[in-house]
Image 1: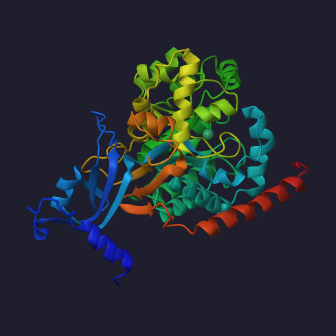
Image 2 (image 1 turned 180 degrees about the vertical axis):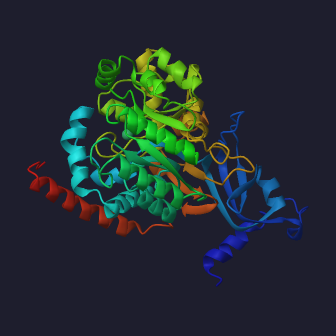
Image 3 (image 1 turned 90 degrees about the horizontal axis):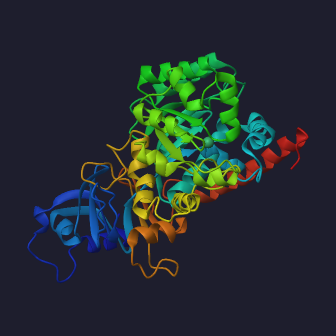
Length: 474
Ligand SMILES: [Zn+2]
């Protein structure tokens, strides 16, 4: 069927008037998609800042990144997308969230972590979290992430096989950690059930091109030595990633010190939990010795500046962690009250300003460093840097365009700083994952937006009712 849109695409695929006629269409290599943007930050090792750039994509893979004339001369795409006023980037990698908690967005605010968790989050979860809840919440989170330019995320929650189904449908890439915790939780009556559920999850999603099944013991203060060691053993058996929370609050630091006589990191090392494929979130109270240990054991760190600020947890030693050789990615954490959104442009902005105010010095964490943390270093932190995190031939085509033609971005003197400190999630006008367009600036192509929002509102009613019934009326 030849619609107006396909006619337009055909016209756009032809070389612009006045362009070099040297390349005959027949000599061009067929490809699926060419994306053209007015500028590009490919996040390669040299940190190139490019002007007008095109990317050619076939079979979900990046074939070439280059000048528009060169790409047009070499490739014949089925579809050609032009974003003349935007900057092309690899998609953002959110290294720590709890996607389904989008259904509890802002349910409890302005409280310390332990109170927030034990009085509101754990009870609300116990009464409401089911496979249906998780699917509706993850759909909502995927919608938010796709519109905001996040193409990969790391998740810690329950019923991760249902999270995976939602992610698969939405078209995103994710590392999904089934949460283990030492009290009965949704789908996890005890450690035995956690092991069985997780083994089935690992088996089911083995080999999926975009979904990596992982294991996520909650934290050293909610998981025993036995639980943590069992999680490490299962992760090693499957070569699966491990995700956890470490040194989030000063309380946790004290609790673990009293219980085990060491910092959480030193204790995790003593029981053999630290090692490759592990990413720890927060790390607010990590000591210099802890940082050394994480670097030696090749453990990555997810920095969640907004959550650490909002819960009053403290300021993570990020510049020191990077200096010690720890790979640091950025995360948003969940939306239930610790952030309350999944906006990675905000995460970069906050991470930068927090580091500067903590040091009383504006030089730590520059805009290029923050962009690295949100893209290639995040991919490294999750063990996905060979696949994604930069725009380079051979990598999977996960890319976004951030529009610059607006009153809060112009004029642009320094492109990385504009993106980090001025751009907003609403400026993202294109999101592509694995070569597939998920968001074209007008419509999310893989999700029914109205349906997802309606389901979220319906769940709000159910959650409120369940809390009223248990006498925890908000
Ligand atoms: Zn978390």
